[in-house]
Amino acid sequence: MKILAFVNHVPDTETKVKVAADGKTIDTTGVNFMLNPYDEYAVEEGLKLREKFTGEVIVVSVGGDTHKEALRKALAMGCDKAVLLKDSSVRDSYAVARALADYAKEYSPDLVLCGKQSIDYDDAQVGGLAAEMLGMPSISVVVKLEITAGAVVAEREVEGGNEVVHSKLPVVIMAQKGLNQPRYPSLKGIMDAKRKQIEERMISPVESKVEVLALKKPAAKAPGKIVGTDASAVPELVRLLREEAKVI
Picture 1 (cartoon, helix red, strand yellow):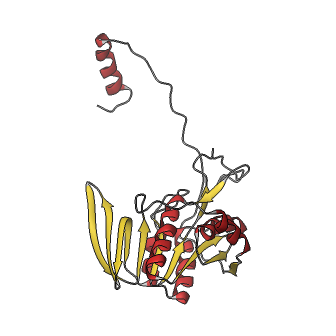
Picture 2 (tube, one colour):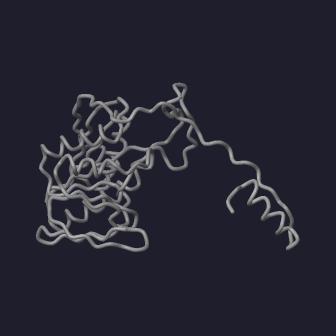
Picture 3 (cartoon, rainbow, N blue to C red):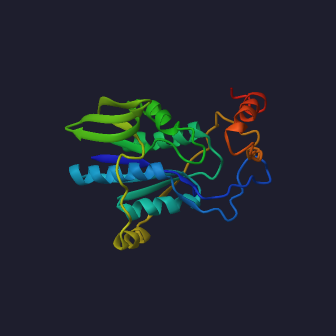
């Protein structure tokens, strides 16, 4: 089975984000980056399917040299090959999906896996856009996946429960937490990853559909109020909720 896994390199979830001087990007000084957590589930699922059906798992990312760190992590987990579609310019989801889809068309995979979203912009668009560009069906927020003789049965989260979707290969699957438990890279895997070459391809810029006009942090929360410690405080609490908070 030919499996592609799309991954992104994102700020660590514990990062204290600061807006850069240009007012449109984040200040990366002192920021730790990591493999997007949802993409880890995609990589792990690809490795499990390779173990079941044989074949190869190729991991692909769009970005600058810093993305090699995420690709190395995927290689250490056990991926066969890593490809960096190199472009340091700022791309929106459409432009990222365009680059990934163009590579996928060349490779003709049986299965494309990616996370349901990246934790940087959180717009959850790349997987669906790439599927549309490839002319493939897509299934998002997948928490269970079964593939047998080309038939795909996926369980996905929906509001109020789960939904079972049937499809056929090739298909794009967007992984949700719960699909699996990503493996920790072994020492051997880490050493092997250091020796593996990451294929680099320079890609031409693509016009983004979204322009960032300004980036700013949300306003600081107002300090809390203590209106009392017993039942006598209820009338005042109700008044504040109605007149100040305007939630009732």
